Image 1 (cartoon, rainbow, N blue to C red):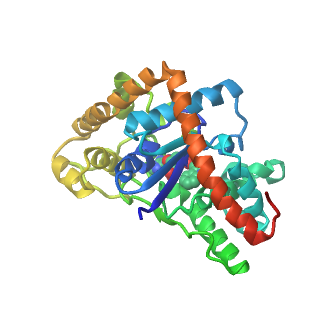
Image 2 (image 1 turned 90 degrees about the horizontal axis):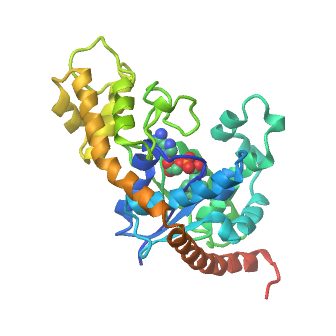
Length: 332
Ligand code: TYM
């Protein structure tokens, strides 16, 4: 039997190069080997305030991006989370089996809530429980994500293990993370020690998948780079920005960082940045163009989401019934 993959992205704005290299590009390769479910996690998105029209637009745009990047909607399940109510049901059950102390350790909550913890929403705090529910709902064996999701995944494993132990069952499959080491953490173009993120203030810090060729070229040209060394080499401590650009180049070209470093060993920063920009445009523009094309056909995108949601709900309901039985819920 094939393994089961589950992964997702939040429709909170443009996807960026980090999302693509850390997650989506990996998904495209995995669809040959695994049964795959790729979700647009709109219920996660509302842990921070969203505008309704933008949320709707972003949900469809992410579906379009999955497809444009090469995920085949005929072979894989693509849907938005809120269409499958079993996510919320299982999240409640798991929440009753998750100590608050485990959630208090989550660094993403600490970062997002900041000093104002008492005013942070309950949903932001319990978000990793919903993420565990997403994964455990489908007997997921593998979860391909970027490194920033590692702690949440470890928590999902802990929740599955402790539930199984408590109820003396093996009902939940304990999922394995799939974190592709080289592009697991794409960094900001303005500061090589910060991760590339949707929420960073400067748009120059990230390459959005919706950026046109000119914008991509401009952003790489303006990317921060050190001046004190000759040639290009990888050293994350001394040269975080150049090392990040090497990582990006290698991931886009499907070569190792070592190979990329050899290729540019004698180049100057300017030429090297130009090569990264050219490759990024070459690889990303077909995706960007296809997203635009697909966004003109909302009816098609919605039909994919609806079909995906029906298939996901059927699987989810079957698995949830097993869990309800174990807990002692009466259902008909
Ligand atoms: P999200 O929407 O923040 O990001 C989607 C995916 O992109 C990866 N990623 C990165 N990878 C490399 N470098 C970066 N700079 C970078 N930034 C983001 C993320 O690791 C992720 O794989 N909680 C998740 C969504 C989620 C999920 C799930 C994932 C909800 N339920 C169940 C897997 C399984 C999130 O906020 O991803």
